Image (cartoon, rainbow, N blue to C red):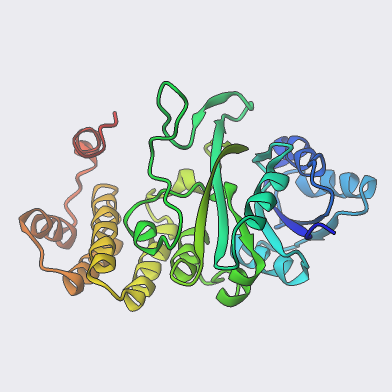
Amino acid sequence: MQPLVSVICLCYNHRRFLSEALDSVRNQTYPNLEIILVDDASTDESAVWLAVYCAQYPEIKYIRHRQNTGNTRAFNEAFRLSSGEYIIDFATDDVLLPQRVAEQVQAFQALDQTYGVVYTDAELIDENSKPIGYFYRRNAQGAVISRTPSGYVFTSVLRHAFLCPPTLMFRRALLEKAGGYDETLAYEDFDIWVRSAQDFKFFFLDKILTRRRVHTASLSHKLYTSGDKQLASTIIICRKAQKLIRTPDEKAALVVRVKAELRQAVFTQNFLEARLLIKLLEELTSLNWPYQLLKRVAEQEIRLGFIRKWYYRWVYHKS
C-alpha cells in the first residue's frame, strides 16, 4: 500500500480562495490522503463556508477555533492528530497541482531515510489566480538558474532564503524529532529549516507542483513592516542558529543572514530589532565601517525611510 500523506490545511480569512484551494487537495491523483483542516478563528465567512463544505466531504477532519492561536499552534494541533508518513503544510490561499503529492512521494521513495524534505518550484499567482511568474528564476530554455541546493543545506538555509515554503513535503520523522513548530514564534518555516537541516537532507525536485498566491493579506507580505512580530522571531531563530553552528563556513553564513536582517530592520525603522541584531552581529564578528554606521543609525533612531527606495536599487537591484 502506498504511504499515507497528511495534508494539514490552515485557514485564516481565506474565504474567497477556499473552493479552489480545497478542491485542489481533494483532486490529487495520489489515492492515500489524510486531510486535516483547521480554521483559526477566521473573521470573514470562512468558518460558515467550511462547515458546509466539510459536511459534503466527511473524510475531511475539520477543526474550528473560537480564538485565534496562530499558524504554529494550529499546525501542531493538526500534526498531533495526523498519521501520515509524509506531511504537507498547506495554506488555504494556495493551490496544489494534481500530481503534487504523487510526484513528491515518488521522489521520497527514491531517496534514503536521511532525506527529510522534498521541495519544488512554484508558479506565482495573484488574488485572481492569474499567473505572474515563478518562484525560481529560469533561463530562456526553462532551466532553473536560482540556487536550489540538495543534501545537508544548513549553511545554505542560513545564508540565503532559497526555499519556497508551500512546496515542501516533510518526512514525519523530521517534524517529530523537531517537536513540531516552535509555538512561541510568529512564523514557522525558517525555524524548522534551521533546526532540522543538520540532521536531515533536503532534495530539490525540479518540477512546478504548487501555485503560490501572492496577495497583500499574506503573512509574508507583512514582513519588515513597522512592529511586525516576524522580525522579532527571526532574531530568536538566528540565536538558535548561533548555538548550532559548528564550522567557520556556518558561522560566515549566519553573519551574512544577520547583516541582511539588520539592513532591513534599519531601513524599515524597526530600531529595537536593529539594536538586537547589532548585538548578535558583534558577538559573531567585528563591525566594519558600514555596520558601525548602521549601529549609530539604530542607536539614535535616525529615520531613513526616505532613502529606502534608493537603497533597494543599490543593494537588491529593485525599484
